Length: 362
Picture: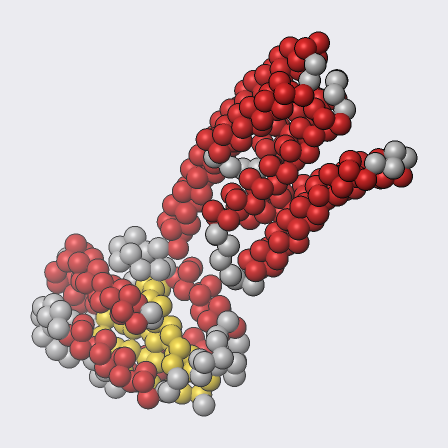
Protein backbone atom coordinates (compact mmCIF):
# COMPACT_ATOMS: atom_id res chain seq x y z
CA UNK A 1 0.00 0.00 0.00
CA UNK A 2 1.04 3.56 -0.67
CA UNK A 3 2.72 5.22 2.33
CA UNK A 4 0.42 8.24 1.81
CA UNK A 5 -2.62 6.23 2.81
CA UNK A 6 -0.86 4.71 5.80
CA UNK A 7 0.01 8.23 6.92
CA UNK A 8 -3.68 9.15 6.54
CA UNK A 9 -4.62 6.22 8.77
CA UNK A 10 -2.32 7.37 11.56
CA UNK A 11 -3.59 10.96 11.28
CA UNK A 12 -7.17 9.71 11.30
CA UNK A 13 -6.57 7.81 14.54
CA UNK A 14 -4.92 10.82 16.20
CA UNK A 15 -7.68 13.24 15.14
CA UNK A 16 -10.46 10.93 16.31
CA UNK A 17 -8.80 10.73 19.73
CA UNK A 18 -8.73 14.55 19.82
CA UNK A 19 -12.39 14.77 18.75
CA UNK A 20 -13.43 12.17 21.35
CA UNK A 21 -11.60 14.09 24.06
CA UNK A 22 -13.19 17.44 23.07
CA UNK A 23 -16.64 15.86 22.81
CA UNK A 24 -16.25 14.36 26.28
CA UNK A 25 -15.28 17.75 27.70
CA UNK A 26 -18.28 19.43 26.03
CA UNK A 27 -20.54 16.68 27.40
CA UNK A 28 -19.57 17.28 31.02
CA UNK A 29 -20.88 20.86 31.22
CA UNK A 30 -24.53 20.26 30.19
CA UNK A 31 -24.61 16.99 32.13
CA UNK A 32 -23.13 18.29 35.41
CA UNK A 33 -24.10 21.99 35.43
CA UNK A 34 -27.23 22.34 33.27
CA UNK A 35 -28.63 18.86 33.96
CA UNK A 36 -29.54 18.81 30.27
CA UNK A 37 -29.42 15.17 29.23
CA UNK A 38 -30.40 15.96 25.62
CA UNK A 39 -27.36 18.18 25.05
CA UNK A 40 -25.12 15.74 26.86
CA UNK A 41 -26.41 12.85 24.72
CA UNK A 42 -25.59 14.79 21.52
CA UNK A 43 -21.98 15.14 22.62
CA UNK A 44 -21.95 11.53 23.79
CA UNK A 45 -22.92 10.37 20.29
CA UNK A 46 -19.96 12.35 18.93
CA UNK A 47 -17.64 10.65 21.42
CA UNK A 48 -18.97 7.16 20.63
CA UNK A 49 -18.54 7.66 16.86
CA UNK A 50 -15.01 9.04 17.32
CA UNK A 51 -14.00 6.18 19.63
CA UNK A 52 -15.48 3.58 17.28
CA UNK A 53 -13.47 5.07 14.41
CA UNK A 54 -10.33 5.11 16.58
CA UNK A 55 -10.70 1.41 17.42
CA UNK A 56 -11.51 0.47 13.82
CA UNK A 57 -8.58 2.47 12.39
CA UNK A 58 -6.22 0.95 14.98
CA UNK A 59 -7.37 -2.49 13.86
CA UNK A 60 -6.61 -1.63 10.22
CA UNK A 61 -3.17 -0.29 11.16
CA UNK A 62 -2.39 -3.55 12.97
CA UNK A 63 -3.57 -5.50 9.91
CA UNK A 64 -1.21 -3.50 7.74
CA UNK A 65 1.69 -4.19 10.12
CA UNK A 66 0.97 -7.92 9.71
CA UNK A 67 1.22 -7.57 5.93
CA UNK A 68 -2.50 -7.53 5.15
CA UNK A 69 -3.72 -5.11 2.52
CA UNK A 70 -6.00 -2.23 3.53
CA UNK A 71 -8.24 -0.80 0.81
CA UNK A 72 -7.53 2.79 -0.21
CA UNK A 73 -11.26 3.24 -0.80
CA UNK A 74 -11.95 2.21 2.81
CA UNK A 75 -9.57 4.91 4.05
CA UNK A 76 -11.46 7.53 2.05
CA UNK A 77 -14.73 6.29 3.55
CA UNK A 78 -13.29 6.48 7.07
CA UNK A 79 -12.09 10.04 6.45
CA UNK A 80 -15.56 10.95 5.19
CA UNK A 81 -17.22 9.47 8.30
CA UNK A 82 -14.77 11.34 10.55
CA UNK A 83 -15.37 14.59 8.72
CA UNK A 84 -19.16 14.16 8.77
CA UNK A 85 -18.98 13.55 12.51
CA UNK A 86 -16.97 16.73 13.07
CA UNK A 87 -19.13 18.83 10.73
CA UNK A 88 -22.39 17.74 12.36
CA UNK A 89 -20.89 18.48 15.76
CA UNK A 90 -19.84 21.92 14.53
CA UNK A 91 -23.28 22.65 13.12
CA UNK A 92 -24.93 21.63 16.38
CA UNK A 93 -22.47 23.64 18.45
CA UNK A 94 -22.51 26.69 16.20
CA UNK A 95 -26.17 26.80 15.16
CA UNK A 96 -28.37 25.13 17.74
CA UNK A 97 -26.48 25.05 21.03
CA UNK A 98 -24.48 28.30 20.95
CA UNK A 99 -25.67 30.65 18.22
CA UNK A 100 -23.36 33.61 17.73
CA UNK A 101 -19.62 34.18 17.42
CA UNK A 102 -18.60 30.58 18.14
CA UNK A 103 -20.32 29.40 14.99
CA UNK A 104 -18.01 30.92 12.38
CA UNK A 105 -14.76 30.16 14.19
CA UNK A 106 -15.74 26.53 14.61
CA UNK A 107 -16.84 26.38 10.98
CA UNK A 108 -13.37 27.50 9.88
CA UNK A 109 -11.74 24.86 12.08
CA UNK A 110 -13.80 21.95 10.79
CA UNK A 111 -13.27 23.01 7.17
CA UNK A 112 -9.50 23.34 7.59
CA UNK A 113 -9.28 20.02 9.48
CA UNK A 114 -9.71 18.18 6.21
CA UNK A 115 -6.39 19.51 4.89
CA UNK A 116 -4.46 17.52 7.48
CA UNK A 117 -5.01 14.49 5.25
CA UNK A 118 -3.14 13.88 2.03
CA UNK A 119 -6.10 13.28 -0.25
CA UNK A 120 -7.20 14.34 -3.73
CA UNK A 121 -8.19 18.01 -4.33
CA UNK A 122 -11.62 16.93 -5.67
CA UNK A 123 -12.31 14.97 -2.48
CA UNK A 124 -11.33 17.98 -0.37
CA UNK A 125 -13.42 20.36 -2.48
CA UNK A 126 -16.55 18.21 -2.24
CA UNK A 127 -16.29 17.91 1.55
CA UNK A 128 -15.57 21.61 2.05
CA UNK A 129 -18.48 22.73 -0.14
CA UNK A 130 -20.70 20.13 1.55
CA UNK A 131 -19.84 21.51 4.99
CA UNK A 132 -20.55 25.08 3.84
CA UNK A 133 -23.92 24.11 2.33
CA UNK A 134 -25.03 22.19 5.43
CA UNK A 135 -23.98 25.01 7.73
CA UNK A 136 -25.80 27.59 5.57
CA UNK A 137 -29.00 25.55 5.38
CA UNK A 138 -29.01 24.98 9.14
CA UNK A 139 -28.38 28.67 9.75
CA UNK A 140 -31.26 29.72 7.48
CA UNK A 141 -33.73 27.46 9.29
CA UNK A 142 -32.58 28.16 12.87
CA UNK A 143 -30.97 31.60 13.21
CA UNK A 144 -32.79 34.85 13.66
CA UNK A 145 -32.71 37.48 10.92
CA UNK A 146 -30.17 39.52 12.90
CA UNK A 147 -27.60 36.72 13.07
CA UNK A 148 -28.44 35.16 9.70
CA UNK A 149 -26.65 37.50 7.29
CA UNK A 150 -23.50 37.80 9.37
CA UNK A 151 -23.18 34.07 9.97
CA UNK A 152 -23.71 33.16 6.31
CA UNK A 153 -21.23 35.82 5.19
CA UNK A 154 -18.62 34.67 7.68
CA UNK A 155 -19.26 31.03 6.80
CA UNK A 156 -18.70 31.73 3.10
CA UNK A 157 -15.61 33.75 3.94
CA UNK A 158 -14.20 30.91 6.06
CA UNK A 159 -14.97 28.43 3.28
CA UNK A 160 -13.22 30.56 0.63
CA UNK A 161 -10.15 30.91 2.82
CA UNK A 162 -10.15 27.16 3.42
CA UNK A 163 -10.44 26.46 -0.32
CA UNK A 164 -7.60 28.87 -1.09
CA UNK A 165 -5.27 27.34 1.46
CA UNK A 166 -6.39 23.88 0.42
CA UNK A 167 -5.38 24.65 -3.16
CA UNK A 168 -2.02 26.00 -1.98
CA UNK A 169 -1.40 22.94 0.18
CA UNK A 170 -2.33 20.63 -2.71
CA UNK A 171 0.07 22.41 -5.07
CA UNK A 172 2.80 22.23 -2.44
CA UNK A 173 2.26 18.50 -1.93
CA UNK A 174 2.23 17.88 -5.68
CA UNK A 175 5.49 19.81 -6.02
CA UNK A 176 7.05 17.80 -3.20
CA UNK A 177 5.83 14.53 -4.74
CA UNK A 178 7.26 15.53 -8.14
CA UNK A 179 10.60 16.49 -6.61
CA UNK A 180 10.70 13.29 -4.56
CA UNK A 181 9.93 11.26 -7.70
CA UNK A 182 12.76 12.93 -9.61
CA UNK A 183 15.19 12.40 -6.73
CA UNK A 184 14.17 8.75 -6.47
CA UNK A 185 14.68 8.35 -10.22
CA UNK A 186 18.13 9.93 -10.02
CA UNK A 187 19.02 7.78 -7.03
CA UNK A 188 17.98 4.61 -8.86
CA UNK A 189 19.90 5.73 -11.94
CA UNK A 190 23.13 6.30 -10.01
CA UNK A 191 22.61 3.10 -8.04
CA UNK A 192 22.26 1.13 -11.28
CA UNK A 193 25.37 2.77 -12.65
CA UNK A 194 27.32 1.74 -9.56
CA UNK A 195 26.08 -1.87 -9.47
CA UNK A 196 25.56 -2.89 -13.13
CA UNK A 197 28.29 -3.90 -15.56
CA UNK A 198 27.97 -1.61 -18.57
CA UNK A 199 29.09 -4.19 -21.14
CA UNK A 200 26.98 -7.21 -20.21
CA UNK A 201 24.22 -5.50 -18.15
CA UNK A 202 24.80 -8.06 -15.42
CA UNK A 203 25.55 -7.05 -11.85
CA UNK A 204 29.16 -6.01 -11.26
CA UNK A 205 31.74 -7.12 -8.71
CA UNK A 206 30.68 -4.52 -6.13
CA UNK A 207 27.11 -5.78 -6.12
CA UNK A 208 28.31 -9.40 -6.19
CA UNK A 209 30.26 -9.00 -2.95
CA UNK A 210 27.28 -7.43 -1.16
CA UNK A 211 24.87 -10.03 -2.52
CA UNK A 212 27.21 -12.91 -1.65
CA UNK A 213 27.32 -11.78 1.98
CA UNK A 214 23.52 -11.40 2.02
CA UNK A 215 23.08 -14.93 0.64
CA UNK A 216 25.31 -16.29 3.39
CA UNK A 217 23.26 -14.78 6.20
CA UNK A 218 19.70 -14.41 4.83
CA UNK A 219 18.80 -17.87 3.62
CA UNK A 220 15.30 -19.31 4.11
CA UNK A 221 14.45 -22.36 6.19
CA UNK A 222 13.59 -24.23 2.99
CA UNK A 223 17.05 -23.54 1.54
CA UNK A 224 19.45 -26.37 2.39
CA UNK A 225 22.57 -25.58 0.37
CA UNK A 226 24.30 -22.48 -1.00
CA UNK A 227 26.04 -22.80 -4.37
CA UNK A 228 28.76 -20.46 -5.67
CA UNK A 229 30.02 -20.87 -9.23
CA UNK A 230 32.96 -19.00 -10.77
CA UNK A 231 33.06 -19.02 -14.58
CA UNK A 232 35.99 -18.21 -16.85
CA UNK A 233 35.92 -17.98 -20.66
CA UNK A 234 38.65 -20.29 -21.96
CA UNK A 235 41.62 -18.66 -23.70
CA UNK A 236 39.84 -15.34 -23.92
CA UNK A 237 43.12 -13.41 -24.30
CA UNK A 238 43.84 -15.42 -27.44
CA UNK A 239 40.31 -14.62 -28.67
CA UNK A 240 40.84 -10.88 -28.11
CA UNK A 241 44.25 -10.88 -29.76
CA UNK A 242 43.01 -12.76 -32.82
CA UNK A 243 39.56 -11.22 -33.42
CA UNK A 244 40.04 -7.80 -31.79
CA UNK A 245 38.46 -6.16 -28.78
CA UNK A 246 35.09 -5.32 -30.45
CA UNK A 247 34.57 -9.02 -31.15
CA UNK A 248 35.76 -9.80 -27.64
CA UNK A 249 33.08 -7.48 -26.26
CA UNK A 250 30.46 -9.22 -28.41
CA UNK A 251 31.57 -12.56 -27.04
CA UNK A 252 31.29 -11.38 -23.43
CA UNK A 253 27.87 -9.88 -24.13
CA UNK A 254 26.67 -13.19 -25.56
CA UNK A 255 27.93 -15.13 -22.53
CA UNK A 256 26.44 -12.47 -20.26
CA UNK A 257 23.05 -12.79 -21.98
CA UNK A 258 23.11 -16.55 -21.41
CA UNK A 259 23.72 -15.98 -17.71
CA UNK A 260 21.02 -13.31 -17.63
CA UNK A 261 18.54 -15.75 -19.17
CA UNK A 262 19.46 -18.22 -16.45
CA UNK A 263 18.82 -15.53 -13.86
CA UNK A 264 15.41 -14.67 -15.31
CA UNK A 265 14.25 -18.26 -15.79
CA UNK A 266 15.54 -19.80 -12.55
CA UNK A 267 16.22 -16.85 -10.25
CA UNK A 268 19.96 -17.55 -10.12
CA UNK A 269 22.01 -14.46 -9.28
CA UNK A 270 24.56 -13.66 -12.00
CA UNK A 271 27.37 -11.09 -12.11
CA UNK A 272 30.44 -10.20 -14.11
CA UNK A 273 33.24 -9.94 -11.56
CA UNK A 274 36.04 -8.88 -13.87
CA UNK A 275 37.36 -9.33 -17.41
CA UNK A 276 36.15 -12.68 -18.73
CA UNK A 277 35.15 -13.90 -15.28
CA UNK A 278 31.54 -14.36 -14.14
CA UNK A 279 29.85 -15.65 -10.98
CA UNK A 280 26.59 -17.34 -10.03
CA UNK A 281 24.99 -17.68 -6.59
CA UNK A 282 21.88 -19.69 -5.78
CA UNK A 283 20.25 -22.00 -3.24
CA UNK A 284 19.56 -25.70 -3.74
CA UNK A 285 17.63 -28.31 -1.80
CA UNK A 286 19.88 -31.12 -3.05
CA UNK A 287 23.57 -30.76 -4.02
CA UNK A 288 23.03 -32.99 -7.09
CA UNK A 289 20.81 -30.30 -8.63
CA UNK A 290 23.82 -28.00 -8.97
CA UNK A 291 25.39 -30.38 -11.49
CA UNK A 292 22.25 -30.21 -13.66
CA UNK A 293 22.28 -26.43 -13.68
CA UNK A 294 25.97 -26.21 -14.54
CA UNK A 295 25.57 -28.80 -17.32
CA UNK A 296 22.67 -26.82 -18.74
CA UNK A 297 24.72 -23.62 -18.61
CA UNK A 298 27.71 -25.18 -20.40
CA UNK A 299 25.37 -26.56 -23.06
CA UNK A 300 23.75 -23.14 -23.60
CA UNK A 301 27.15 -21.48 -24.01
CA UNK A 302 28.33 -24.17 -26.45
CA UNK A 303 25.13 -23.70 -28.46
CA UNK A 304 26.14 -20.08 -29.04
CA UNK A 305 28.69 -21.52 -31.53
CA UNK A 306 31.02 -18.54 -31.21
CA UNK A 307 34.00 -19.38 -33.44
CA UNK A 308 37.33 -19.49 -31.54
CA UNK A 309 40.15 -20.55 -33.83
CA UNK A 310 42.84 -19.87 -31.21
CA UNK A 311 41.29 -22.04 -28.51
CA UNK A 312 43.31 -25.09 -27.54
CA UNK A 313 40.31 -27.14 -26.41
CA UNK A 314 37.53 -26.56 -28.97
CA UNK A 315 36.80 -24.71 -32.24
CA UNK A 316 34.25 -22.53 -30.46
CA UNK A 317 34.09 -20.53 -27.22
CA UNK A 318 33.97 -22.69 -24.07
CA UNK A 319 34.11 -22.06 -20.34
CA UNK A 320 35.75 -23.51 -17.27
CA UNK A 321 33.63 -23.51 -14.11
CA UNK A 322 34.44 -24.03 -10.45
CA UNK A 323 31.59 -24.64 -8.03
CA UNK A 324 31.62 -24.73 -4.24
CA UNK A 325 28.57 -26.08 -2.36
CA UNK A 326 28.13 -25.43 1.36
CA UNK A 327 25.32 -26.20 3.76
CA UNK A 328 23.37 -23.04 4.66
CA UNK A 329 24.50 -21.63 7.99
CA UNK A 330 27.66 -23.77 8.13
CA UNK A 331 29.92 -20.79 7.43
CA UNK A 332 29.61 -17.02 7.07
CA UNK A 333 33.20 -16.50 5.92
CA UNK A 334 32.80 -15.11 2.43
CA UNK A 335 36.53 -15.10 1.63
CA UNK A 336 36.97 -18.78 2.52
CA UNK A 337 34.05 -19.90 0.35
CA UNK A 338 35.19 -17.71 -2.53
CA UNK A 339 38.70 -19.19 -2.31
CA UNK A 340 37.28 -22.74 -2.36
CA UNK A 341 35.27 -21.97 -5.50
CA UNK A 342 38.34 -20.36 -7.03
CA UNK A 343 40.37 -23.49 -6.27
CA UNK A 344 37.72 -25.58 -8.04
CA UNK A 345 37.99 -23.25 -11.04
CA UNK A 346 41.78 -23.56 -10.99
CA UNK A 347 41.43 -27.35 -10.97
CA UNK A 348 39.12 -27.19 -14.00
CA UNK A 349 41.68 -25.11 -15.89
CA UNK A 350 44.56 -27.33 -14.81
CA UNK A 351 42.73 -30.46 -15.96
CA UNK A 352 42.35 -29.14 -19.50
CA UNK A 353 39.59 -26.47 -19.35
CA UNK A 354 36.16 -26.76 -21.02
CA UNK A 355 34.81 -28.51 -17.93
CA UNK A 356 33.27 -27.94 -14.51
CA UNK A 357 34.63 -29.02 -11.14
CA UNK A 358 32.10 -29.17 -8.29
CA UNK A 359 33.32 -29.34 -4.70
CA UNK A 360 31.24 -29.49 -1.55
CA UNK A 361 31.76 -28.83 2.17
CA UNK A 362 28.95 -30.96 3.58
